[in-house]
Amino acid sequence: MAGDISQERPYDEIDLTTRAFWALSAAEREERFAVLRERRPISWQRPVRRPMFPHLPDPGYWAVVCYDDIVEVSRTPEVFGSGEGVQLQTVPPEFNEESQSFIAMDHPRHTKLRKLVSSAFTPRQVQRLEDRINANAATIVEDLAVLGSGTDFVAHCSGRLPAQTIADMIGIPEQERDQVVHHANATAQSGDPAFRAGRDPFEIILEAQTYFQNTAIAMAEQRRREPADDLMTRLAQAEVDGDRLTDLEIGAFFVLLSIAGNDTTRQTTSHTLKALTDFPEQRAWLMEDFEGRIGRAVEEFIRWASPVMTFRRTALADTELHGQKIAAGEKVVMFYPSGNRDPKVFADPGRFDLARDPNPHVGFGGGGPHFCLGAQVAKTQLRAIFRELLHRLPDIRAGEPDYLTGSAIFHGVKSMPCTFTAAGS
Image (cartoon, rainbow, N blue to C red; front, side, top):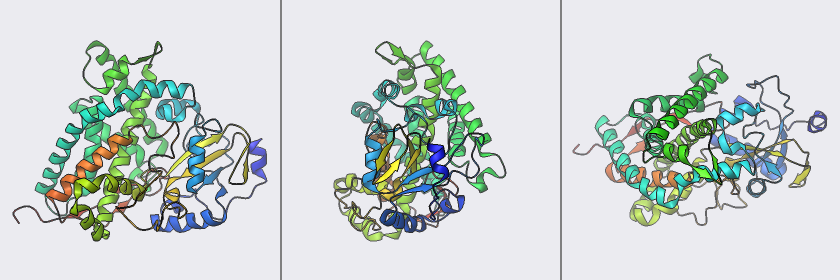
């Protein structure tokens, strides 16, 4: 039914699907979001032009750009489901199964799997991890200082801490860590023409998924024989109501953690250093009482960066959202950067305001059962890295970023030089 109805429906004149749209700057995209929020808060959009699976029918999707609508979609999983996938384009069930873990599942399976992996993200476990995060952050900034002014901040700082945190959490062997980072970055950048250099994006993604699956299964088998104090051991041993994770489920979660856990914190760190450079008065405010203000500041870091830009749901029944009728089976895509700039919720949303309070951003999703499981770990990392950066290198500044283009998922910075005065200079 969704396909028949959509054939008669015109696509919106503001096209949010093209590579050209995602090659625009964040400010240029926001200009278009602002028009849609004001005039067409729920708009019908074209499907992806060159999908990974062209044989699958895909009439298009509804774009959700207002904060309150994003929250409603997020918090009504009985109406807007995740089981068909969270990407803009239509993909086969087995692709979701192997790459998106429980974020592409509905109750009761989502509930079961989330319970099985959530033991690694309790406040107690995050507290245990915090000492290691702080130590890694100190080492990373010390290394950056030695490398000197002009160093690529992404390669030598923002990209290192989340990768090390994931490796420490899951117990990735030292000899595998560079490969994990390589394949995570490749997946996130597969849509960028400069990165893929003529390769098929799906080929890059499939290669990465195969690597993650094989690595995770081998690690799980080893942990069953030789348990250790890490997340992989808990995943291999976890049991809820007599159920255990299968090797495929462990592999899919490893894919999710390695990609999402790496890119969200990495991108937020990069965007934040650029913002602190562009708005020096905000840096000065933070440094007047760093420990007392960093908690509130981190929330603005995340709102400003909006590192994950889109997530999709699928209508499970005929419904209505913001006055627009939506048919069962139609895709609904939430645009988080637009929600985080909604002036009905955020006063002066274009201002980087570290004192913003309240700050109910949707940087980790709009709530509900799919709210980001790793939110507290991400915040811990952001506090740690900026504590070190702003005290150890107090005049560090960002140069012009080279932004990731072609991705509707990650608000990415591929590289960005940084300048600072080294200690003793």
